[in-house]
Image 1 (spheres, chains in turn cyan, red):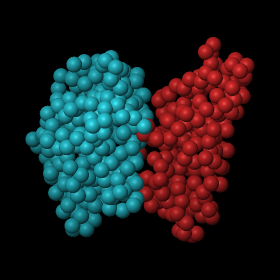
Image 2 (cartoon, rainbow over the protein chains, first blue to last red; image 1 turned 90 degrees about the vertical axis):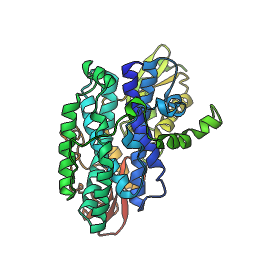
Image 3 (cartoon, rainbow over the protein chains, first blue to last red; image 1 turned 120 degrees about the vertical axis):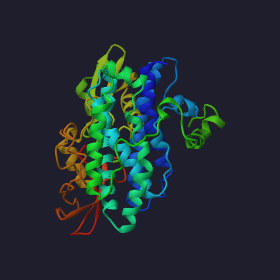
Image 4 (cartoon, rainbow over the protein chains, first blue to last red; image 1 turned 180 degrees about the vertical axis):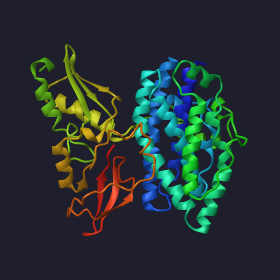
Length: 250
Length: 170
């Protein structure tokens, strides 16, 4: 598989799977404002998905557009990190997952605005403006809940401890990532990880939460198509219509 | 009529009458969505840029541009989407901002250009001071970073007690 195609799928799939999960919370948010915020974030991520997957389809050159890539690939062909397929869980878990994702997403996108690939630069420059809101909001909620009541603090700490092992996969570069770094397409892992840890550490400190060790063992595999079983359920719901009624349009 | 028989100014003026589908008091030109209009041997090419990448109004806007020009007799209209430079509320016209206020939506209060790059936007910070579009009081409070559409935040006025939308700097 072409490395750039694979790399673009990773970007699109991360945004798509998290968007799909957030969409499941539409109408179920703990407050009206939170409900709208989750849906808005989901919408931004879906828009970003379309930009990534449509470019991926062009690079692949086999006539697959963003819809075909989204709705007709099975779990093993998905390239998202395992973090985004973790369950919505409680609101503490939803927001901690979001914060860890947004923190990485923001600094990656910042790096991609200096990519050697013009189209990637454009997509990143468009996306980072939206991700800036996402990260400010999720960081704000991590602080408010972490430094909130004894119960909210305990829930946020538990969510952090549970999700931390999924926070490192993005920085574990493989042949695809390294090929992109070599071509000047993607930023190197070390600097990205440093920025991530600094920002996450500062926000968690303000939130009075204890950051787990940066060198803790990390889950991996999603980027290479080895997923948790949850992804199959997520795709089953997301892809049902196109599987049951191929080519359906309205 | 072919595209060559009309001026670019005329086409811009026609596009200036195409309303934003979500906020019909402001045109897509005042909003800064139309980036370029060109004429070539085959017809008219209109370049638009998305406000937010997932904005569902973009397809409606693209359709409306084609319909508006075809209704004036320009048969061949092609639409191009441009991502870079990314859309910013700094492109919104003064007329557009005034129209928003009249409609009950507070317009963007600052320049947005420096948001990215400096990493300043991701830190927690005080919400901008926004004047209530109903009573002009600046005694207002942010309710939510996100409102009824991606481009807006929710505020409430602490004097006249009315909630209102704020068109965010972006």
